[in-house]
Image 1 (cartoon, rainbow, N blue to C red):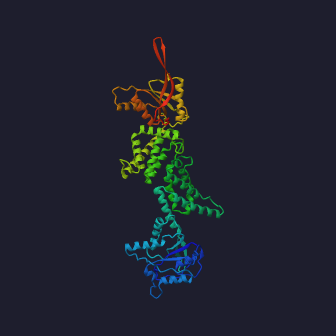
Image 2 (tube, rainbow, N blue to C red):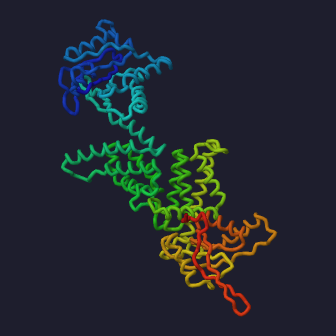
Length: 567
């Protein structure tokens, strides 16, 4: 059987003595004769077992109080006798009295005694009677309850709080003020959610409240609107799980994203929350303001960049810098990846690698400063400071904020460009069905002079690289390299060549001067472009006294280091 602890205050009465009062509970008179002790009335009203433990919180002077004329038995003794007369276990004399509270030290000692009495014991039902608290004791009880439940109760244990209100000289009514204790609990779990994004505990509380609400609705014959608190709890739980694990796909981008479902549930359950716990209705506004920017507009922002930027900002608010930089990095890659590769979630190895290469390549070319800063900060955070030039915590926090701010600017600029009336300079958001995958010919051999077999094989390379044949071949002449050029000059020439490549280049034939070829291949492979050399048979014929050489194409041989490198 579950044990019971009734905790009660016993203060000196302001009028000199407590009078017997007949109380009602839930509209009905409490059985038994009127009594001056509310704790006994509570034991009767709640039908507590006779052996329920009663803990008395009082000062020594209150326990020994003999009335204004010092002619009565001590009040503590009278309380014990009243419980015994009711065939109940009498409260024991306090082992530790409350100090009077005249000094700061005594006030803290009061708080400590209260905290020890309220500290939960596994499997024990607790009831707190605050009726006869002396001076600031009831206020301290509220503070002690909040502290104990925040520090010592995980998960939270039931605690019922009652107050005996005097309605006239000899009658009173027991008030159940437990909902205000529950409000403290709500404050705790919601603060945790607002500060860290951890909403699992808040979701469990809402689900429990929803079960009670639905039970009352069913018992009342299902009259009125169907409760929606279950939907709110489930959507908050899913949202919190996505935040905790950085699942950007289910959180932001799916058709019924966790952010969208939570936003809808908030709006549906507003009236219900207002009726159950009125102060929480205003909290829903704060949650809605948090979630609304994360609901991606697929038509207006097909790549979800604004939602990703807002998510990175939200992680900054939670002081979760590793998650913030991770989201920022993926948003930048999505900004420059091919349109069909911008949605998170499971995908083929080819799709994932293609997104990385194309996204990083475009990002590095468009904003090398942001690319370098994000990469360095992300790596520093991922390696937990085990790096040669590890940054300080303050520097990392500042760097992440700057990177996220830069991302937000880029996302807004992208959106404005997409919405511009003129599409002449609009970014390419086409899919392979509407766009073109390109084979770049970087050589001294124009593709118009290639054999049909060579042209066909060049385009067929796309099946392995992007899952579909390449659409066309673009010729980019291999530049001359001055014989006195150093390596820095060669790199400069290579950069000029790379700048001429179409945005959707998937493969390139690179053949020419050896050092420039090597630099070009390294640069192109680093951007996700597969590089090849053409192989051929040399056939020599003698025409009179002249030898004529002809080259017959055989195949494209990949350079080592391609995304689909052969053994």
